[in-house]
Image (cartoon, rainbow, N blue to C red; front, side, top):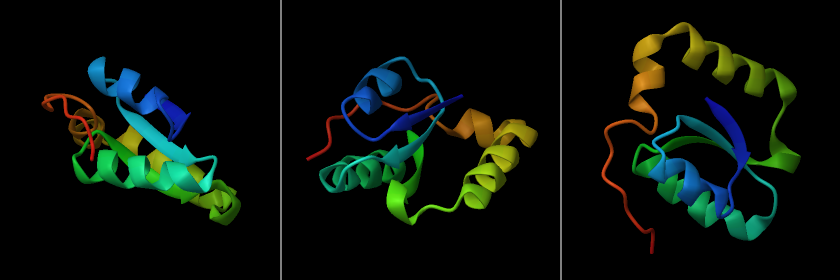
Amino acid sequence: MVISNAGSTLFELAIQKIPTICISAVEHQMAYANEFAKKGFSMNLGFYKKIEEENINKILSEVLQNRENLKKLGCDRKIFIPN
């Protein structure tokens, strides 16, 4: 499990099939974050200025406590290039 920005690192994590929670560090990363989340490679928490710490803790806890949630992220997905 990785918590990452939503830039080009998402491509590297997707290729390695590493479950990822992403946070956009700059506005233009939102497109990548949304597309990777839509395809099931990651969970998108949104733009960093709008995220509350409690939400990060809640999502991380839910994913780590349920093995099925963890398996769904990143694993067994076909590699893609977002538009």
